[in-house]
Image (cartoon, rainbow, N blue to C red; front, side, top):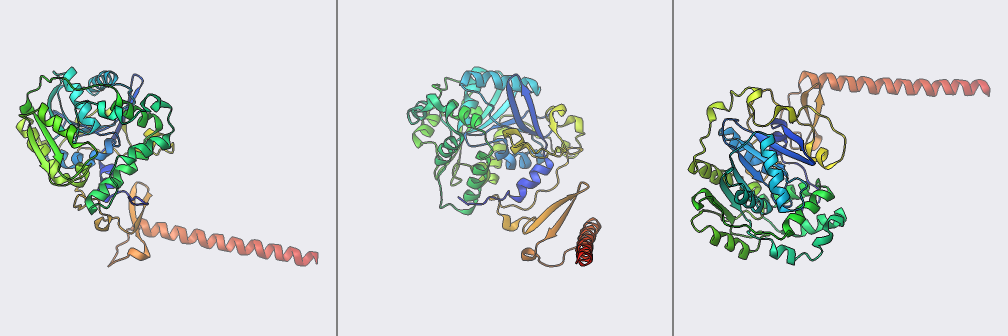
Amino acid sequence: MKSVFSAPGDYVHFKSQVPLHKIPIGTKQWRYYDFGPKAVPPLICLPGTAGTADVYYKQIMSLSMKGYRVISVDIPRVWNNTEWIQAFEKFLDAIDVHHIHLYGTSLGGFLAQLFAQHRPRRVRSLVLSNTFLETRSFSAAMPWAPIVSWTPSFLLKRYVLTGIRDGPHEPFIADSVDFVVSQVETLSREDLASRLSLTTDDASVGPLLLSDSFITIMDTNDYCAIPQQLKDQLGERYPEARRAYLKTGGDFPFLSRPDEVNLHLQLHLRRVGVEARPDLVHNIPKGDLGGSPSSKESNEDESDKSHEDDRGGSENSPADYDINPTPESSGSGNLDKQPLDSSECCHLNHEHALYALPGGFKGRTNIPGTSVHFMCHIAILHLLHYISSLYIIWNYSLEFSQVV
């Protein structure tokens, strides 16, 4: 893993385009992204133990531009699977969503199946990736599970990160690992403890009323943290489910192989009857955006270092649902091809000005007028500071000569 992580350029673009939502429901705090035409039944993405709502940013940007509505959520602080089912149902009621399609990876796939089992009328289809049916093997491998809620944060993070295979990786997979590791660093002790509790809580998925034809199993063939035996059990449970195998992709194919994952998701949604609305992509007024407008985080400058604020940042809510083109990205988040390479970004009266550093200054650069004025002000301030310093030195010298 890299020692220093820099956010990929397409993720920076995503954060500038897609508003973050934070809503309290009962004692639970929900943090999620909701983007796309509200008229379309949503695809809800559930991350694994190490994931956050941000890890599906490539799916949100790609599918929403095609006319699908995508909701990506953080798993809230729930401590057992029954609590998860009740909390997730209240969340859906709060955002006024009734029928859903679930895409879950790892722990998220397990929670998606549990919800489909206990709330069958709400779940129309499932996409399951690198996931499992029961938690017995995880609880056996974690004998200290009863005291997980008292375990220090650094030990929890170390335990979660040891489950992620360390290099060498091909570049795209290495970048996906770096991104997820950066997200783990934003999770609080309570968040990590609750997710590990869900992983070790004694539970298993029972029979689903959902037909296998409405389930897609998407797995990677190279390696992942979920043992192959558990993945095989999943395939045996849903023998008629559609299979989508990725030759490579590691633990996080939604980041390392986004084009393939997005294609399989789009094919699944078409097959289960979800009709995209590309005609609404550039014509949705603010009130018709997905989610509840009252919960948007817009133009917020937060300095608190709590879990919510750490990963919330300053979110800009666009005036309408009109996505600017994403910077060219091959899916790996390689910064060498990003427009912000070797540059610093300054915010001046809500305008963005880029200043090229000497090491990365290439070709001809057109500096906007706002930047020229800013640089002039800086130069004048430095000059005034220099003159005032000379005056102070001259004044003290004069007083000293008079004393002598």
